[in-house]
Image 1 (tube, rainbow, N blue to C red):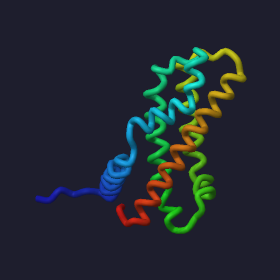
Image 2: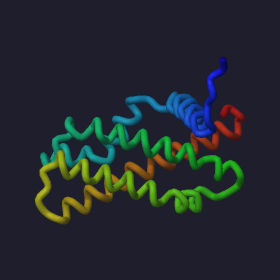
Image 3: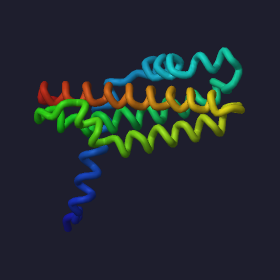
Image 4: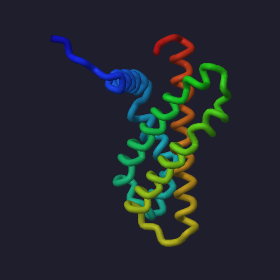
Length: 146
C-alpha cells in the first residue's frame, strides 16, 4: 500500500530541501561578524547586553537570508532587486519589527533616540541579509544549482 501525500506536503518538503541547500552558503562567523557590525557599538556603550542578543540576531539574520533567497526567483526572471525588495517589504518589515522587539526586551534602553538608532540597526541587519540571500539564490539559479 502506497503512502498518499498531498501537494502541500510536497511543496513543504521541496522548500525544506531548498533551505538546507541554500544555508550551506552561510557560516556562523559571517553571521556573527554582521551582527557585531550592526550592534557592536551598543556593546561598548553598555546599553545592550551583547552576549544575550547575539543569538537572536543570528536567528533573524538566517530568516532574512532565507526570505531573500526565496524571492531570488523573481530576479532570475529579470525583475530588478529593488522592485523585488518592494514586493517582500511586508515580510522584511515584520522581521525588522520582531528583531527590534527582541532588542528592546534584552537591551537597557531609556530614551527614544537610542531606540530609533537600534531600530535602524535592526533594519540594516535584516535588509543586508535579505540582499545577501537574494544574490546567493539568484546565483544558484543562474548556475542551475537549484
